Image (tube, rainbow, N blue to C red):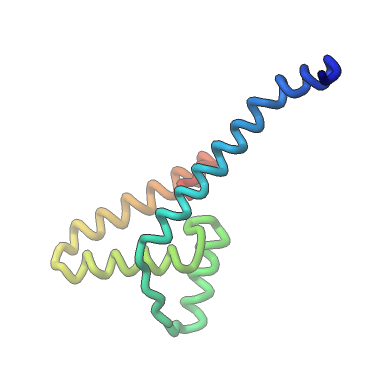
Amino acid sequence: MFPRWIRILCWILMPFFFLFYLIKVLYNRITTFYRWVKREVIPVSLPKGLVKEIDELVKRKVFSSRSEALRYGARLVILFEKGIHKLAEDYAYEMIKERLERREKGVSRH
């Protein structure tokens, strides 16, 4: 039999160990799910000025990474090319507005 103080300590720490285990399991499931999402790596060359602008957006936390900024831009190009220019402009405006509002509130989706 363990001393009483060890048993009390175990009862106090047990919920934390359970939460740690739960977070570990959820993390493993989420990362496993994202491994199934197929992405293709595309080498891109950009002018230095454009790269600096993208880096500035990442630095200001508008985007979490260069890749996210480029994916966002690619989605906008597709919207424009499908002939829904007005919708794409409104969509882009709303997305940017939403990001800025989240940034002001200190909330991030990432």
